[in-house]
Image (cartoon, rainbow, N blue to C red; front, side):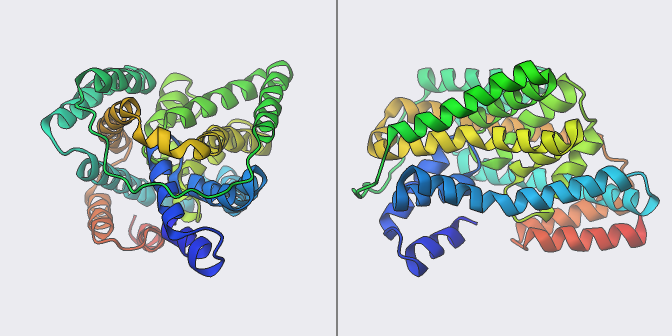
Length: 358
């Protein structure tokens, strides 16, 4: 999705320069949250300040939110029907392939030396032993600060560009969100817990949307048992049907917890921190990207996510009733993903195969 945003912002609308856009993408890859959503916010911020960031962020995510609410409602009413069960049995195998592919892509991108591989393996073992993934991430950051050589990646010099920036606007959004959390605490404590968990997940999801998967799985399936593992896999499958980031699975989780209001609370909460971070940091882009400490910590965190995704791939796999057709479907999906075939086609073809053969 990022190249499409670049084409719109740089070539078609000429809101920002190509250099400014690339600087923004580099920033969004370094901070937690869904990269494409943050890139949309960054473009809006560079073009029209905080209000522009909010407009582009909401505009980018709203279609996926509405689609996910509709799909979640459909799922809640029909998931026990035999044809729907067959479809999701097939899609569960495809989800395992999707997460396995994400693990391979993370590993190929970030694991360049033995230290990185070691951090990833330790993270996988700790998560497999039941250690909270957030604690694993914090430990990885500390290891990175102590053990990494901290050589920051080569980056292009940021291009100065006048931006209508207001700290007051940012503080107003943050204050409104805080008041909303207080209201939820007194009105319905489960919704407050849902919001708090989603806020925390977004704050620790370094490396893009897929980094949120093990965090959500741990919090909602393993710790609180608000949904079971097969249902969570089905939520990821539905998320892949929408045009939004995989983090939109949070909408499904929220819907399953407390209907439409739960979906709204979960969606706002899982996207708000990364929005505030990108808008808050963008004016200080040069300083952040030159910080050797930020480079050390964020690099080790990204290594740890390879391990977290590896563990969650096996956990997802253990919740699939494997047989020869499902194994073949998962293998074919993984090969198709490695060949860069569009994910929507893999999901649609997998759905047809599941209906006909499972």
